[in-house]
Length: 332
Image (cartoon, rainbow, N blue to C red):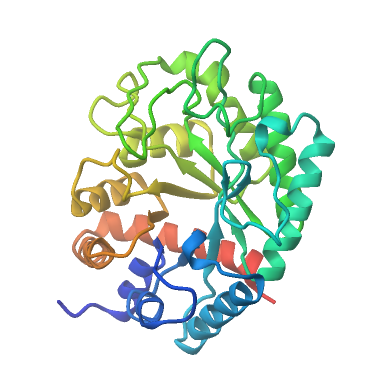
């Protein structure tokens, strides 16, 4: 591997949120912290055996990052409730967004979840889902969304965000610019949503505007293709959707994340994905499974940062957002 400036290595690693195998601070996890200098890790059910084990895992990972002279880690989990909840008993198990009908319901879910995540050492929840599923559409998201129109989703989603973040758990609203109209699962396919921008603005994007106004820490891009918005790149790789639409039109200044780049909806090799992510000003790339893609992504980010002054400037902006967020939520 080419030798890069240590700052470039850190800038590249901080752009990655990575999954790993195991339930303790093993060789693989040490590698992605010490060598890759990952900005964060994401936990799944195989990483979690018990509350005590989870506390030890998160604590040991943070201690190791500090010992390596690196910023604290984002430690993330998908704890939406219902069908997507990585933490099971003895953690509180909620029925999920379709069963949240009032702001009191939303606060109840978010406050208990925040307390339990914080007690385990988790600091970021990849929630809430703020997609809008219109009536009459057999939405792939029907079991994960708040029931109702854009106004209801905006109100309940914003309440979850505020309640999580008031307790120092970073919230991530997903999946911009909205996948509630889709009927195929991007874990297995590349769905195409041939909806015009005005329709998306009128409904699907409104909860993300509300999330922005609630100062949501992160917004996750969908892996869906929106040919009327970008006829080449799906949302998670689109300079128009991530840059012009989310950053520009919505004026969102927080963290922008991809969904998992290991999902079947991604038809491109990792180097192509990284080039698009960098060009789009996306802050965090999620690679949720062990494999060569992690090193490939890290090395490609370093190569692009070192060889392209414009991408280096965009990289500094992302690094500033990441470190500013970590200082706000993870210091002290």
